[in-house]
Image 1 (spheres, chains in turn yellow, red, green, purple):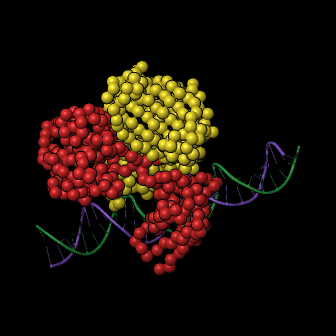
Image 2 (spheres, helix red, strand yellow):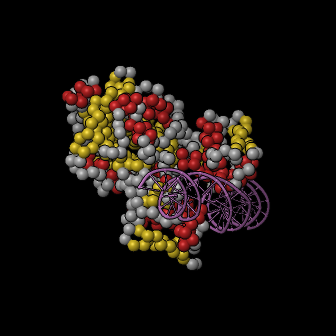
Image 3 (cartoon, each protein chain N blue to C red):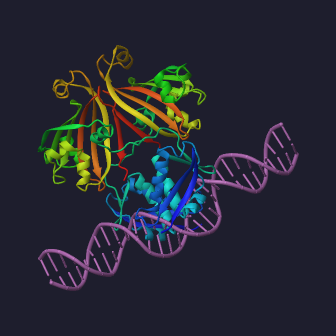
Amino acid sequence: MGKHEAVTEGAEGPVQFSVDRSSPVPLYFQLSQQLEAAIETGKLAPGSLLGNEIELAGRLGLSRPTVRQAIQSLVDKGLLVRRRGIGTQVVHSQVKRPLELSSLYDDLEAAGQKPATKVLLNTTTEATAEVAAALGVAEGEEVALVERLRLTHGEPMAHLRNHLPLGLIELETAQLESTGLYRLMRNAGITLHSARQAVGARVADAAEAERLAEEEGAPLLTMQRTTFDDTGRAVEFGSHVYRASRYAFEFQLLVRP
Amino acid sequence: MGKHEAVTEGAEGPVQFSVDRSSPVPLYFQLSQQLEAAIETGKLAPGSLLGNEIELAGRLGLSRPTVRQAIQSLVDKGLLVRRRGIGTQVVHSQVKRPLELSSLYDDLEAAGQKPATKVLLNTTTEATAEVAAALGVAEGEEVALVERLRLTHGEPMAHLRNHLPLGLIELETAQLESTGLYRLMRNAGITLHSARQAVGARVADAAEAERLAEEEGAPLLTMQRTTFDDTGRAVEFGSHVYRASRYAFEFQLLVRP
DNA sequence: CAGTACATAATGTCCGGACAATGTGACCTC
DNA sequence: GAGGTCACATTGTCCGGACATTATGTACTG
């Protein structure tokens, strides 16, 4: 199969793109990945124009809709901005990543913190009113309960309590200690779709302080999260407490046009 | 101009859609709005199939790409889920709204809380190292500074401190007390694009406690936010403190597939 | 010199079709 | 009856074109 190539004027000379029609990877996806890589490595400088869609399509041997689909996916990610009559520009700010439904485990791992997990509890319990409402089950119904302590550098960082409906996934303590809950759920074939979160703060009582190696009255960051799969089922309800002295939520968010 | 209509089987009978080709509103947008309205009012029941794209297009007198564009926008909003070989389903969870770059003012107003704002400070100051780094200006450069107290039911809820580059917008105290900062910026022609946020917690010191009518040692929720416009300029740096006893961040987020 | 009108360039919208990939269910075979 | 095979339905990808809309710059006009 022939490879088509195209050149776009970057900051330090031209940037090359090419697509492989014999690959099973969709053409628009090939292009969007190359564009994203070029942007992230700085080969496409912030603020620079991308060159018009028609010509880019022609040079790559693609149709304009395909090129547009590639560009659109990066616009949705916040990496590009389109201006009618002007062109498409590389956004010029420190966009890192938008808010994702990532687990604390993944966050820490990405930050190179090598998180450790200690499973305090892995059992079942009767759903309280709050848990039942969140998971959409009857009050008093049996649900899975996991309590974990997340540590970095041997120091506790957060206390995580999760309730899950039964029959969804078999949680083994060993797995829980070696990876994050979301990864386990994804591996079990559950398609995470959305989550509803609430973030607040309170001060530690004696028991919490003890668990987290803080003093009584220390500030704590709290998060409650209900996660849904793509059928709309609630698949997890989490009630977490973080030491404010050691953790803060950081995220990027995009304005939907 | 002829109107085409289409019927999709909903929960309690058929749902009608129609597009008006004489309208300047894009066809895909007309359709997506009607679909969204039907979903929100429950005329399209959660979990119900949408009917295949080809037929829907035919009945509306639209092409399939146009119908797909309408559906895609709702998939991006998390309202619909596509399954290859199956069809398009109405997601059936309590999706309310994804995380948006909304101001506290809008949040409270939407919740029917009638927020009041008291401007404590509306002046300029020299940028500290932190502010300079966030706004991308030189340390010591003159920037605008606004401090506001946000109240509901006569009770303080949050202390808001914002730094802005000079020359971007003229902030008048009267306007600041009657609406939110983001709305003022949008009205001034600034296109908000993305923001980087950090949410943490700490306990109140004596001065903060006094300002917020809390006691010393009370838990506070803190947020720092840098907002960028679509050219990548930092247009605002906010450093806010909320009374944890009266406020928590709530939001919905979607998993990007 | 200022203001308008026009040409130009780029993205936005829309069409009609083609083939591929995938999940479901029915049918058939053993 | 159990299992595999195949037809079918549906979304996924891609094409090539057409016209509309909007912003920019230029040339013309008063």
